[in-house]
Length: 111
Image (cartoon, rainbow, N blue to C red; front, side):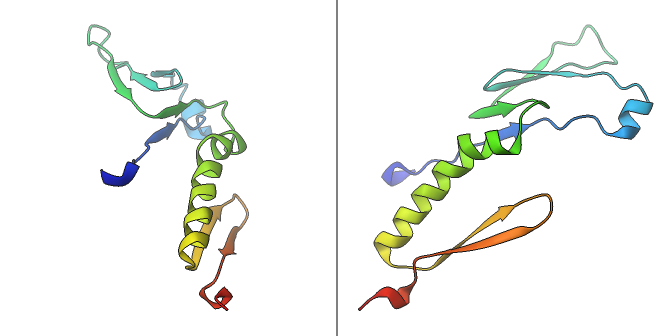
């Protein structure tokens, strides 16, 4: 991409839900900061599948950690660009309970 634009892809593994726990499902993946490795529980001879991401978060990661690593820098860049170009943008921040809409800069600020 031109102009230094990039796309970052992250993955987050969720904890097992109650159904998976009742079925005594096993963990079939391993994660490090950038790689997710999945093993086939039905075929122990099959090689594991490896996927590489810009960041990989396991079940013990928090929303705050991911936001600090990925979301906050993105919001900062958007805010700077919006104010520089004097345009309106809306940033949606998904939370467990509610969604907040934050307005950053407006075209009406031009005097």
